[in-house]
Length: 340
Image (cartoon, rainbow, N blue to C red; front, top):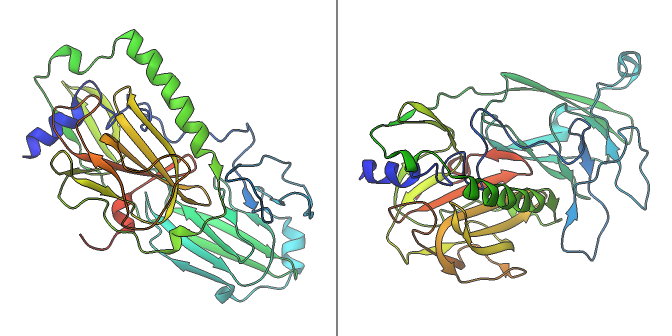
C-alpha cells in the first residue's frame, strides 16, 4: 500500500514533488512576496466590495489612513523609543495553535494596532484584531514579534519554534522518464506555477480559519508534509502536502468554509486542481482530482463536497493530495485537524 502510494507521488516529479504547480523547486523554500522589499505585516483595509485584494506593498513607514491599509514596520523599533514606551500586558495578544515548523497560529489583539515588527513574516490584521502567523518548514528556533498598539503600549513576544525531523522517502529503480521532465512539460509547469502564485498572493477578509478544520477525505495517510524525496538517488524536492489514499470518486469536502478561487483541469503534473480561499491569505489546494462539484466564485461551507478524488496528472494511483498555504508559506494541513 505504501509502495504504491509512494510511486504515485514519485512519477515524473509529480505535483507531490518539485515539478508540481503547487510545489516548490528542490532546495528552495516559499516563493518571495510580490515586492522586493522584506515581507511585512499589513493592517487589513476597511470593508471592500472586491472579492479579493492583492497583498499591498506600501512603504514600511507609511502612516495609517482611512483610504489605505497601514503598513506595519518590518524593522525593529527604535531602541530609545521602545525603552520609553509603556509595556503592554502580555494578555493583549492571545494565541491558538503550535509554534512549530509548518505550523499556523491563530492570533488576536486586544486593542488597535499601530505597527508590528516581525521580520520575515506578514499577516492581515482584521478590524477585530484577528490575524494568522505561519512558520515555514525551515523556520529558525526563535522568532521575535514586537507590537505597538495605538495607545502607545509595546508588547514583545519571542516564539520558541519547535524544530521537526522530516523522514526522507527513497525510491529507486524508477524509469528515467519518471524522474526527468521534458522541456514542453517544464514550460507548461512554469506557466501554471505563475498562475497559482498570483492567486495565493491575494486575500479576502474572510475568517473561516477560526473554524476547527476537518479532513477533506478519510483514508490512510501515505505521505506527509515536508518529506524530502530521493528518486533514483537524485534530489526529488520536498513533498508539500498530505496524501490520503482513497478510491477514485471519493468526495472531497471543504475542510473549512471559504470561496473557490481556482478550479481547472489538466494542469501539468497536478491534473485537475481546485483551491479554496479561507480568508486573510490562507488557502487549501487539492490536486489529482476527477472533476469538480463547485466552481470559481462559489461560497462553500465546511463539509460541502467540492470535488471528487481521481488520479489525474502524473500519478499511477488514486489519492488526494491536500496542501495549505499562508500566502507563499507552505504549512502542514495535519496540524490543523485533530482527528480523522
